Amino acid sequence: MILQSIKMALKSILANKMRAFLTMLGIIIGVMALVVLVSLATSATNSVSDRISQLGNDLFTVNIRDDGGKPLKMDELDELTAEETLGLVAPYLQSSGSVKQGTSTVRVSITGTNNAYFSIMSSVLAGGRLLLQPDLDNYAHVVVLSYEAAAELFENVPISEIPGQSITLDDLPYQIVGVLAENESVTSTGMESYAVYVPFTVTARTTGSSDITSFYVMATDSSQIAAAETALDLWLFTRFDGDTDAYYVQNMETLSETLSSVQDTFALLLGGIAGISLLVGGIGIMNIMLVSVTERTREIGIRKAIGATQGSIMTQFLLEAMVLCLIGCAIGIIGSGIVLLIVNMIASSGTDASSSAAATTYTLSGTVIVVSVVFSTIVGMVFGLYPAQKAARMHPIEALRYE
Image 1 (spheres, rainbow, N blue to C red):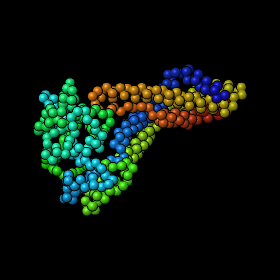
Image 2: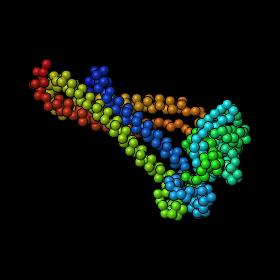
Image 3: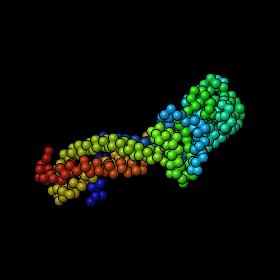
Image 4: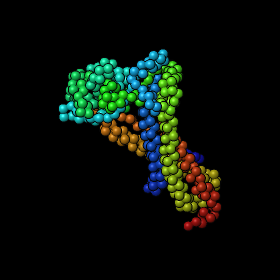
């Protein structure tokens, strides 16, 4: 009986194609909004989560909020490496500036740091060398370029020939000592495509402050993260005389958990907004089903006169409403796939071929597709119930007399 009811529902829909399409439009838009928005949000946050996870859970970021008149200096960081559970330590001071080479000018992020920074960030050399301790001790005006910055400044010049060249960074001369390899992960450039790295002491001199306000610390063993965090907290607690508000420590594991929580909340919010569109579409389904019941009153009367039960008539109209919703849902999912395909094409075409940061690929979320189908089915049942009941409760004599 159900199969026969579905066939009758499809026949009724095909008999009024334009009206059926306009009726489904609300469901189509609602499903597209739900699938596209949640898929975009999920793909973007997953991409960021993957890049953060590349840094590893054994990395800590320390930010000094208030040094209380006792600023942290470079030589004090050596005390941290003496801790058994703590390994590499890298201060970093970030700013932005302009790099000039010949007629080329590039706006870059400037990171003042030491050699340990590149090991922490898993950077790979394409040519030359990284920063060395003598560079920091002698305030040497040397610089390591990211792959993108080197490619922009030295177009058509082999990477191997770039080290040794001179550039001007914020009107000061620097010698290039190394170029980082192209890397699709975020770790090699600290989330910046056009970046340069100079000795921390040089950045401190040019900015007029040698105070360390941010630095990275890496645990010696990923299995001792808790012990490393305890040792780091204890050192900072002692260094700032018990003032826990003076500093803030964050590890990548905490950041990943926070990001995951934000992702879930964001997806739920977007899903709720898109769900409203589906409810509006459901109201349209109910309206057109009421019209359909009215138009087919005599048909209902004839079916009842020849023995059709209330249950069979109710099933027919309820399935018709559900079929309308599911067809609209299917069209919406196909439309969502097309939209995401276009978004990916635009994103890939807008990404520089030489960029090390891979463009985020937006994909249909299987979970949200299942949710769309289930929700559309529920909408069809809920908003088709009243018209179906109205049809099932008609008196056969009155239905046959209807003009």
